[in-house]
Length: 172
Image (cartoon, rainbow, N blue to C red):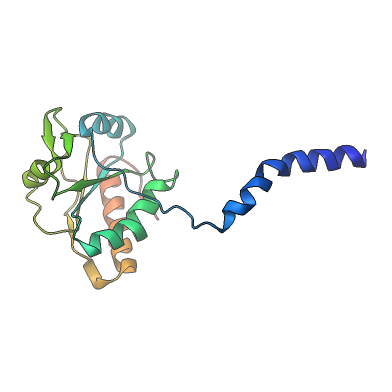
């Protein structure tokens, strides 16, 4: 009987033994998906009654990188948030070569889409419904000057958006 338990334990651990050499490699950072088809995503958001968080970013924006890495990408990578609380996507205002399907199903670019939202400062975060209508005031820059304050403000705006979409008050 002990031999059977040992065999089961070894078989259970075997897949992880080869990974031990890889365990010293740095963990891959969570990434924020680039917006591609907001029309399809909007249909999903409407069906689930959840908002879409659009981060307008630029390659040269250091605060954008900070907020993506510290706040938005981890939320998007968390299965308790992405697709349940909201969808998280990034729109690159400095990319006229990156195609995008807008909420109405029209083909455009990230840059042209950002112009429709009058985004000229980054980072800017809009929380919208499935049709692209604003549910809250946008977050522009780094409110409060810290990642913690930004997170608190974002959570507050998400609560406001979810309430407008018919959800009971949510506490993050």
